[in-house]
Image (cartoon, rainbow, N blue to C red):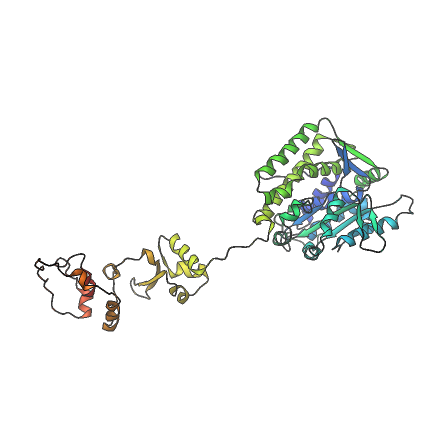
Length: 471
């Protein structure tokens, strides 16, 4: 069943206004816009359930093939959010963090640079990696990188001891937004890392088909960011902790049960990617509530957030469906013999060259060289005879008696065929005290051509006589 995310609140309305003018899936615009919004309010807005408050930080990944609108979606999201949080985007956006040490160093320098400002120390950071596969290729060498990522998403202290003077950030507020192709997701993101919590904190979203526009010169419509701007001022003027309303708590229990049921129904290699579905839903709902200046998360907000996260769950299952135990997905090597056998069996045990050769990527000579394949020719009317492939175990024992149009052979070829049959004479001598049976009358010698054209007399010969094949 398809999951249709609800584009909620002032951010959702702005996305719906812009979406018809860009060649990208509107879902990508909405996801990127919410990610930018969570980065802007992440330093002061927290969400609480069961007495545990944590930052409302959203980490997202747009997964689509090359040219499928990932960058376009990000640019449209920046257009949507710039009227409200444009200054934050200009001063707090970075990229190219490829080690745990560089991550801590960037956050520490950001905090140090803002320590003397009137608004106080600012630890907000927006990391955008439009070529995430390049980063993933490099961070494999640094075992501390994934541990630092987990701490940053949780808002827990992170430290760097590789420098002469140790650096630390006690309350990081970092948001990560990435782009990747499905093949690179399979190659670089494994279930082992996700099981440790490194990459299941990132919500993946597979983008759909890209609509084609008639006019490439269309400009994006202007966005009135007054509502989001007012919400930005409300969210950042002081720390706020958002909580669920009484009306949203029944749905929250459903969300938690949904997470458990889905995780138990999937293989472990897929389930590890969706273990934080409930937590992600709560964080998205907090961002939606903050966009409407509300410290209470209503049922409608939680429902809209759940529709978005369910779409992420479906994308995660799709992206990891062919990855065995988190390793690189590879197809088994199939031999040419197996390919040919499969094509022959698919056509009922008998297939022509046109039914086999184009599908096995081989020439007729290569297929004919396979020992388990029998090659015959059939002539139908005028033209070249058709080449037919069959399996040797399905081939008849006495081929000459089953051929419809046998082709004459030279006498030397017949002698070679007869020489291959070795018969023990003693096995067929009559036993003592028995008169031998009368010798069957042998017909007059005929030519090879006549032998193939005229039917052989079989009534005078025993059916189990091995010399029959030599006549």
